[in-house]
Length: 268
Image (cartoon, rainbow, N blue to C red):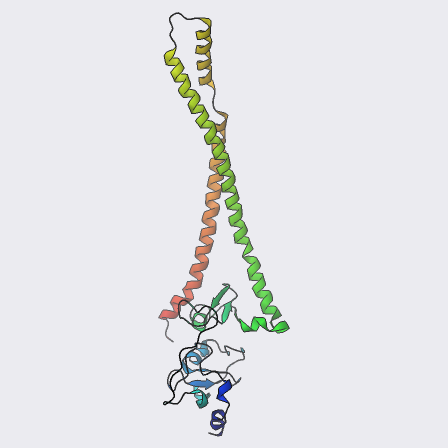
């Protein structure tokens, strides 16, 4: 009881009256404030999830206490006659799934996550507190890990740029082929028109020359046609490359979601 009374006499003016994990106001029920051995305080609802993490969400010190051994910080529970405060704004964009503060970064997935996403989806991943990344030399290793992950994102982006460049180059070449084929089409149409106009009667040297010219055109195979197999091979290769990139991203997304769905059906 003495320890509890000491907690009651703390200067609550300088202490947040909300859980720093879920940002819900403390109460005497599911959100009653429990003090962890390291000195940080969180609500009962959030600490109930801590056995899955075994460390403090704030300082990451090991938690060896059971829920029953944690002291209730009664000084943080508003009195019943005290009007409830309006919900405080959370720093940064809240989690789109749980509307909680995204205080963590999953280094494996390179995503900002809230505490519940941490538990449901990223429990087995490498997780860092955003605040920890700002703690000077102490966070050098963590920042280096994040930097490595950021660098790794260059690979897929460069792959996509290479694929886009190949498609754009092919588009230019195919555009030239189209212009050439349209010119050949006009020539063939002109040859047909000239052929219909030529009369075999009263054949003179000019008509004979035109006649031979039309026939000679028909022997020529457009040189651009020989490029079609090359274009097809390039398009097939680009298509396979695109499919591989898409499959890689789909598999990564599926891998991130599997723990989430497992968490939905596994008993707590």
